[in-house]
Length: 212
Image (cartoon, rainbow, N blue to C red; front, side, top):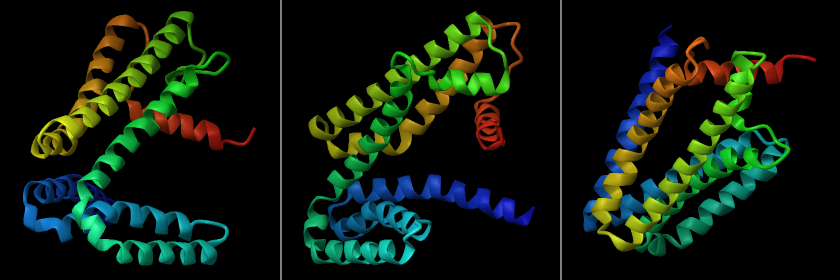
């Protein structure tokens, strides 16, 4: 119980603290060194986590150390362009999510939201399948709009405006999408038991790991 509380408090601190710190470094010119450190920190952590879990752990850890050395050697460049690193991370996440949802809309593939729905409410009615596909399209368009918006703001608007959008508005917009989809689903599929997105994710994960 204590471990779970600590874990959720750590996640909450990260979700709140990192955007605040990133926004601070974007606003104040004297924070270039801090900005470079904060901007590359997620990349370094991710690289080392992937290396640690790799079958070739020691080789990948060695490569990760070389990456850190390369970053250190180019630190002055990072200090001058850390805002670009923030943008690359942000637009990269949006594009990954865009491709994750959008690639499942290709003919012959099952839309991602249909997979989630099928894991919770098997078998799906034709109406539910159609709705789930439309939800997948909606999420694909949403992440496309987010990627375009963050790019336009970064290159065309003051850095402070882009920073507010990427650090403080994207997650609330994602939450708004979840809430809107929940209420639309209640109206469009009144006979279907209402579940939360995390319930679908858990059911889908369990279905994938269950032996056949």
